[in-house]
Length: 244
Image (cartoon, rainbow, N blue to C red; front, side, top):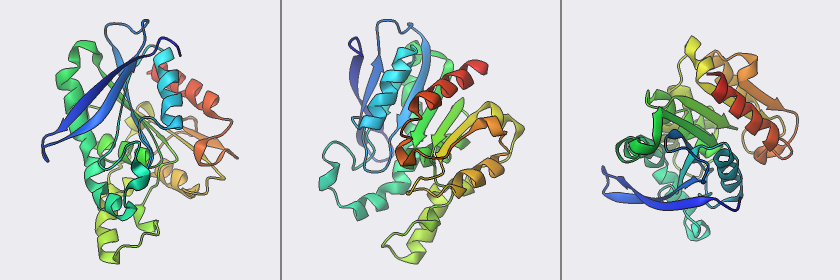
């Protein structure tokens, strides 16, 4: 997209006196006020990652404002970071979305249409969508791709007691509630051949939320990156957002 406008921003996390690097994306056709989509990357990814950039361009083409930010310890030089140290940051990475939402509402209200904020996340980002994003009433719509249901099932080289404690802080299993309105708010997608997140996870989330079949996009193949299905996913997302 040749006319993509980018504003780099620092998002303060007041509880820890730090700032997260982020960017706001739009184009010349974006209205003065429009819904905002916050894109949440996967683990070890950042706002410049290919999957994130792809959907940034797609959403901007539909005249949304898009915000993406780098998690604590993440960024373009992520390969030089100790993964174990990042795992320890995970609880705060997940809860940071609450302060990011506050920053949007406090600092971007002049460009936000009717407080319509949408969270879109894949994998690790999908976990953020379905935990702190789910319980935050300020989020109108939640779109999670290949999200994990229970992080206690992940093989991590950390003490079992720490893993159990962490899993209760970051697992959708402990945040989701069944409510008929979930069908107006939540859209899921998963590929059966995803080698990172077991397919059974999306079925557990679907049952927990009480979602209809048309709120869950299931593909036979495509893996963790939804190869060959991005167009279909994006078109369904746009339909979902316009239906409500």
